[in-house]
Amino acid sequence: MFLDQAQEALNGIIDNDVIIRLQKEINQPLEEFTAGAHPQEAGFQITDPSLASIARTLQMMLGDASGVLGPLSSSGLGYANALYIATVLAELRALKDTDLTVLLVEEPEAHLHPQLQTLLLRHLQQRARDSRLPVQEDGGAPGNPVAPAGHLQVVVTTHSPVLSAAVSVRDIVVMTRRRNTDTRRWEGRAIAVSALGLTDKEIRQIDRLLDVTRNALLYAPRAILVEGLSEALLLPALAERVLAAPDGAKPEDARIARLALERFHGTTMLLVDGVGFPTYLKLLLTPVGDARIAQRIALITDTDQATEEGNPQRVLNYDVEVERHGRERLGIFAGARSLEPQLWQPGNEDVLRDAFLACHPQSQHRWDAVLESDDPSRAFWGLFDPDKNPDEDGKPAKGTKVSKPYFAQELADILTQQPHRPFNIPQYLRDAIEYIAAAGEQVPTE
Image (spheres, rainbow, N blue to C red):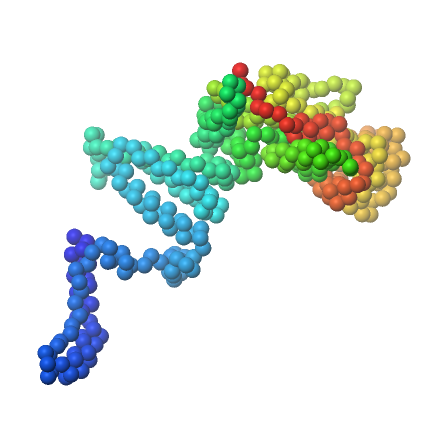
């Protein structure tokens, strides 16, 4: 049918005035110089069209929908790949003839920019959902009950947090690995998040929290969970100091230190931002068979109270989690009160002053008041939380409140740009860094 229509359309070209005139102009001299031998006559004809010949003639063009189409060479690689994917998806029209079609898509992030990754996945999800709708004939009548179901199932493999953030964790299967205790070989394991026993409410909470940045949590065997942005900004700078090989270290010791630092930087850091840790621990540490998503987690938190007051109940609850999962998998590192008073260690005053003045250059008098205070640590804390250092009348400390992330940013800059400048790192942060960067094999799941 198509070829007949193509033949008819092509024959119409022969009757075009330009073709007729060109044919006459060619035949006139041809007839003249062949008249004394075997007179010749030329004419245009359309040979029998075939799909191959038509395909060779047609050229796919691409461009903005509201603009002028151009050759594929003028389009970006991402959109050119999108066109290829669209031609593959066009073949899905045949799924109505089968009960189930499985579409396998391997790492689309290798070919598409982030926006197209998300839009492609949304399109595939919609196609899969639509394929489950009841089949209806024209007019809304129920379709043939014995006809093929025409269902579509899509399986996408990816290393892209952009893609994994675009779907509910309920639809994610995490590929991890464990070491076989008998053969000592690493073995792959698939962990379906839907099999972790998460409630619908926990699923919804995780879906809201795991944005593109946090979604990297599903790809790394090691993770650091922190409460605030200040810790997240400071930890990399502190790790460079904690894990650095000492001056004059032997080559082997320097190599071991370098590997520890690489393990730290290969760790995913998750900013929980006051939401709470339990749901994340359940997601990452709940065993499925003989495997878990994460192999080692460092949880860094504040007690929000003085050392002599002991740990609050929430920190004690985390200790219960350590007992359940094992110290080799989960470490809890709690600092008394808050991060800022913990930074007030002996010998740190000059560095902290420089970071403070970088935030508030005209506030040397406020720093002098901190040094003159009976409790400099609390007075320093009051720069960030005025109600933590009230005056004699019980009113919060005066002065512009210092932004904790801003201060952490300035402090991290000093620590990295001036590596030989002494700075005493709070012990709980040092312990957390050493814990997450420690070499150690995965512990088998009981």
